[in-house]
Length: 152
Image (tube, rainbow, N blue to C red; front, side, top):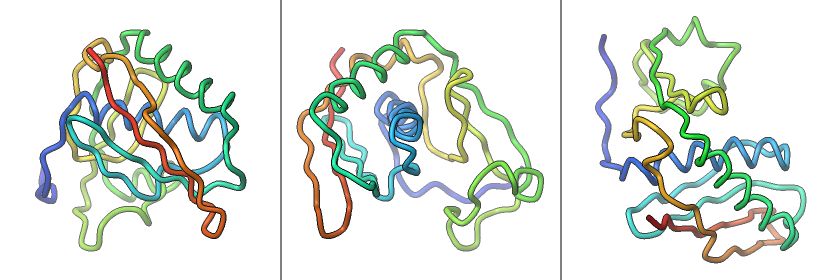
């Protein structure tokens, strides 16, 4: 199979946590996956386009749910397909220009699946505890930014 080269080296626990956070945001708020992501070993940030700023209670619940999912010790597996085979299943508009016809689908147990070429852990038990460090809301853009870290 031929894939595009990956241009960055993620920290697998943080990157896998991003998948869980994205699915939890979709489930809780009905927003899409993050519109901007900066994933690093020590701390990371994700931006979401939302209709309203989450309350402190919702932020606490987000952290609780993400940690509950991590604690399920879910396997992280990979599936391969072609873009045409997954056209109705995923938003292909998020693929970079010139993306290969072959795509890689990453599954976090039965909780999340998405197109991704990044590095991941083999099981969510390798992630650690998810902690939201801070968050902010930009009223003019409707962007909620979350900064987080993982604690072993």
